[in-house]
Length: 340
Ligand SMILES: Cc1ncc(COP(=O)(O)O)c(C=O)c1O
Image (cartoon, rainbow, N blue to C red):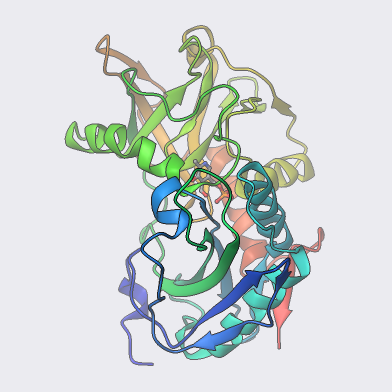
């Protein structure tokens, strides 16, 4: 494959195959690799009208040894299972999810970027209610797709800090809503504040809890983590935040490095001054340092750091975590599966 691997962006391009499974009459079929990047849908498909749609995001890495490794696919499988249960969709069993990922990664081997370019194969599983439905009720048929796309390293010359803003006018997720699962509709609901943030020159939008706008929740498409001035890793406890697999892994890496981890409510106004480092974390970028947060509704600026790069603790976490992903550091927690 003749691609400028080192300069890929995070954008869609068709690859050789996606895999498609169908659920009907209580069971999943055996799945089929398809070489055309389209599906045929009923105009009455449930996902189009009533939003029965959930997705995942994970990656495969080509190591220096040439081996292909998929990172923590069971975690994504479990999260999709939870998304399905929350929205009355036919859940995809964990084993079927992992089989689908393996099959589609192997089928697209030529699209897995070479080691040393920083690029990876992004894997996007998608579960849709595809049965036709006019009255509001769960669909009677489902489609599970896994597509892949090669994506570039987000930061070329080291981690760069960004500014975040709080958009108080809109909430991402209600306290007992669907924020803790990865539904397509959550992202539709957050697009307007995302656009407002971008138009105002902020790379990321930060949400506070919907009930009081007091406690930190998460960024539009990543979790919130902070390192306190006394060296602890803190991240919000909230049932309306998406359980980030990156955050989960970074917490483990932090503990491995002897850093204390606290998962608890974070009062934004009270605690923001106690943080030495703030970052957004997620699969796409791993860690995005945040050096300033601006509250658009009041115009207040909360400076975290003068640095345009990454704070020392987040850098250490990033290096340790990505070292495991690339197969350079020992996989002591069994996070990687080699695809033969
Ligand atoms: C709302 C939201 N929070 C957090 C994350 C980070 O999750 P993960 O680390 O599993 O990619 C994502 C991305 O998937 C997200 O969309």
